[in-house]
Picture 1 (cartoon, one colour):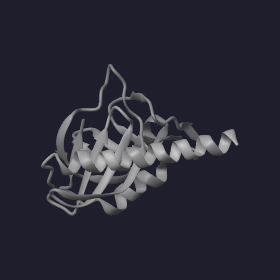
Picture 2: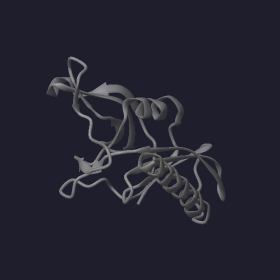
Picture 3: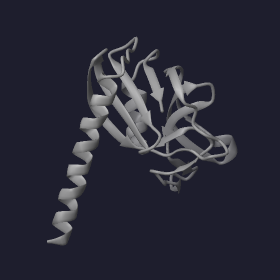
Length: 156
């Protein structure tokens, strides 16, 4: 019974988070040049993806992420999605898959993999990157596949 109650509590907590995220974005006068809008919630380690338009955003995905550590923080502010690529890091002995540019060298991308395909660092929900936003591979791929260039990214 304790496990079931814990699961119910977690589900309710996630539902509450989703409602609060929608309220926050729809009361904040946020717009985007595309039908998508991304809010990176640094406090809760979440990448929230909305579809719609100003004052009428609907949350379609909320992904757990890893953000920049204190010495190399993820930049705060408003940005627009730039270039994309399949992977990077091979010359340094690792692979980060499905990158989508936030600003300069700051990217959304997968967790870090070894060249043999095994996970090198799969930790999420922490501040430990060099400033990029790390996601599960499948979630980085969703952004890579679906979020167009010019989409507004708000990081706070």
